[in-house]
Image (cartoon, rainbow, N blue to C red; front, top):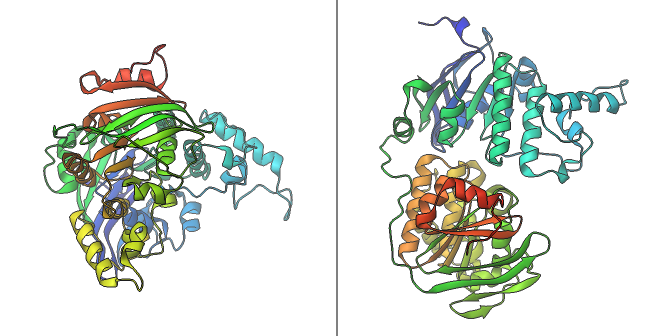
Length: 502
């Protein structure tokens, strides 16, 4: 039996209820000093709710929290931060017009006097922090000029700057490249050496085994287990998370590949995409791989009408089509699932009904046929196993995985022939990943053409029939199934090869 002093954080018997939902039921979490403690579970398992109870965003209904040997009950996030707990949220909230230094020290800027901010000292302190963690960005750079990955690193630096004893990281690598992930892991190692604990929330299984010392698993709002990482294997951890055995993460079945359904000919988009050509067949899953900034998303946004093509043509079933806006794409039976779920996908304050039928409204006539909306929402959300108290729930109150399923329901409601899935499983738990992968496979088997963009090489290799690799807006390689190798894909993604394989 460990003493209380063995833990920097001890949460016991935590209960949290919302109207009609018991989000947390007798949950516990025990974290040792100077360790990385993984918090795992499917979307909706209660991980974020537990962390919000810890930092004062939610009031728990029962249970106790001991931090640094003392019982605590934080009434606000600022109180938690002052006591030594900071959190990096998955959804970033940068201030784009402000500088890196101003974003890091917002609300606690060093002062010359009561009224004046000491900008010189703030820049010096920022430069020291950035240098300490080997981040090569100027303190004077406005955040709007940084990539999402760089903003993520600045968010991490801000959390560290509070001199916290615990830093909570929620999906910290969702927008990072492999080199930036390696840099983050160096920062985490540095923090551990200083005796700082990390609570690490992620759906990326390889990261858990690479970086964590212990893992706590939650499922359906309940505590399942805590284990030393050395006691676990991946299959066993997945089974604890989902409550069942996952036999196949990538359930790709061989299905007949038909005629060309989409041909993209020499398209370019400003400075983002240059002379891109490819073909998509009926029943094919065509993977797109590449590093962040490779131009994959921009290419698909051009095809879907979200960006204007500066040159090139698009053909569907051999006929040239003109797409000036997403409405044109939808009329041509092309659908796209955006990678930016929060910014370009959901309408957070609207309910599930509204979000499901948003791109299909004209079909319901005027006055609007509400009964059909209810029927369609129920049919498609049931097919996709959307977990929600009811369809009147605001979509922003659902887990990330269930938000994604609603967006897929919206996509399928238009019955497209061509479906573009851009990072469909980003921030989604392993159970929902299997469901989405199974759906994509089923759609391909129905003869639909599928384009799958993924930054996770195991996913794109596990699901695709062919892989198109891009680098700086250009196609640098096209690989058939028997040529799939991670090293080869990365060579094309970094444009190490002199020749392009078509």
